[in-house]
Image 1 (tube, helix red, strand yellow):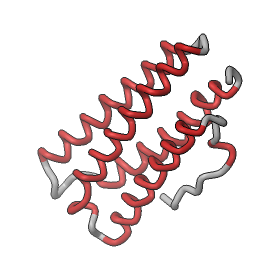
Image 2 (cartoon, rainbow, N blue to C red; image 1 turned 90 degrees about the horizontal axis):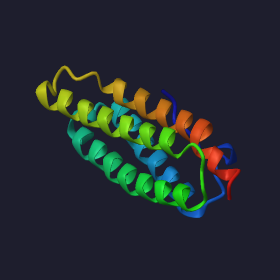
Image 3 (spheres, helix red, strand yellow; image 1 turned 90 degrees about the vertical axis):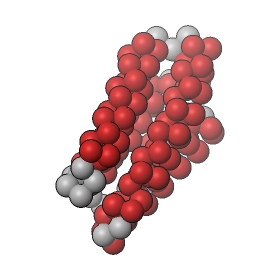
Image 4 (cartoon, rainbow, N blue to C red; image 1 turned 60 degrees about the vertical axis):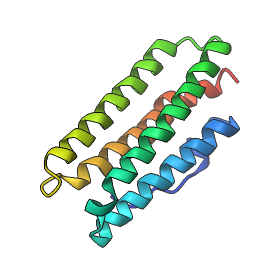
Length: 130
């Protein structure tokens, strides 16, 4: 996985959401770099905890915003947030069961897929309502 660079295709034109998505991108890039350097084992738990923390903050904010603007796909969006939260928890548990054999690239692939797919496919729909 190559570093992901923020660009305007990711923007939903809402300052807090864009800032949080950029921070999430930075975390994902930090994790990718740790894989490249061979230090993923030592930073995994802190990385996934940062992802969970930013996700919880961002998703709560997004859901309140979507509710306030009458966003029609709110339930689908909330389900996507719940699915990510569950998946991250599963990854953390899988890591804790077997740190040595954990497939570290799985988390980076999951987060790249989530970030790019979620922002481009779901978050950008919010832009139409703002």
